[in-house]
Structure formats: structure tokens, C-alpha cells
Length: 243
Image 1 (spheres, helix red, strand yellow):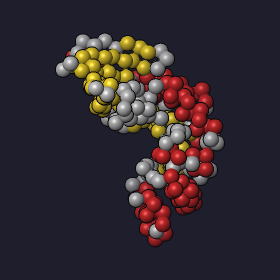
Image 2: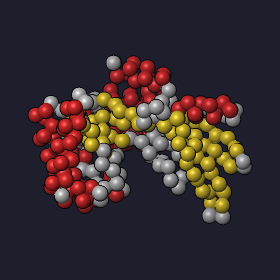
Image 3: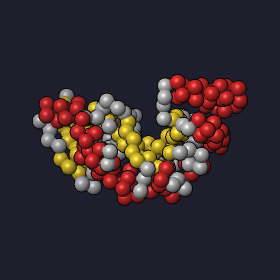
Image 4: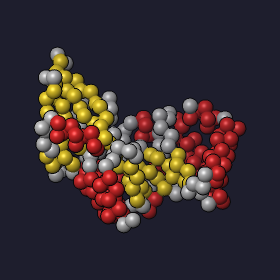
């Protein structure tokens, strides 16, 4: 879809014009661009697109932020030239989650502390200024169900909100234990003969991740997705971010 958009100047100009119209109509502070699932061949075209829309937004007093994948040897990551995008965007929003995605072949955290730290350091090393880098953290997690088979262990992931994870831990009598290296709680139990594992995201894990904002002098934080968090998470964010 993005390939077709980038090749159609008329459609691209119309798209950008409408973004500005709606931003002004609803009194928004700016525009966030989140293009995912792009082809690697669209990498340079995407930078040119961001450069162009930046030229149009600035005279209107609108802020431009762009979501990017973490540095990794994947098709999705290679489609985002983070260093070049940072030259034109006001903020680069680092999606530091889905370390273990929904269809991952292995159970694990959606954002362990070592993985998030490496993602931040890698993004800075690519030339994204700390003053423009916004750390995206997860308000969700996954329950992993492991099924033994002749080929080993197959896993299936189910998304949980913070409240659902707490309720599940209590209901199953599965106490949470703190994993210092991972920077988060974890619990496990057996249901229907299958092992269930949850690497928990809560106020404690968010607090640990947000320590990177101060450590590296980042621009701020963002969360995905709203409604999956518990109220105390906002108190933690307010305390750390000073707002």
C-alpha cells in the first residue's frame, strides 16, 4: 500500500493536505506517522515523504513525530532509516516492544530491560539525537501457552492487559516473582495440562524502563496501548517525567 502511495504524487499530496486540514480542524498539536509493513525498497521513499510533510507542517506550527522499529536484522526494521528520518521529524518514536511478538515461536517478554536498553543504544548509534528520541513502552503483555509435541514445544500467545494479568495471577494462585535482570515480574501455572507463562508489565516494569529516559537524556516516553494500563502507571509516569 505504501509503495503505491509513494509512486502516486497526486495521492500523496492529497494525503498530506488532509492531514494538515484535520490537524487544524481539531486543534491538534501535530501529526504522528506510523507506517508499518513497508517494503525495504520503500526505505528511501519514506524518508523523502517525511521530509516533504515536514516542510508542510512546520509553517502551520504542527509537530511531526514518526514511529520506528528498533534496529534489527528484519525486513520491518530495515524499512526504517532512523538516522535519516530524524533529520526531518521533530520526534522519533521508538516502538520498544514486541520483543516476543504474538506469533513468536518462543515464549518470552514483550520488552525485557536488556532488550529495551539495546534498542535505545542502537537507535542513538544510528544517529538519532537523544533530544528527539521518545521511548515507547508497552502497557500490555502476553500469556504464553506451551504445548508439547513431537517437534518440541509449540507456543501460542494471548494479549493481556495489566488488570487481567493481576486477576489471572490471583485466580490461579500463581505468585509473581521479580526478575531483576529482566526488570519485571513473572508468573507461571499449569492449566489443562499446559504450562502458562506471563512476563508482566506493570508500574514496576514501566518505572525500570523509564529510567532510560533520564540515563540517556531522551525526549520523553510514549505507551501502547491506552486502556491496557492501570491507574498507578500514570502516577509512576508523572513522578518520573516530572509532569
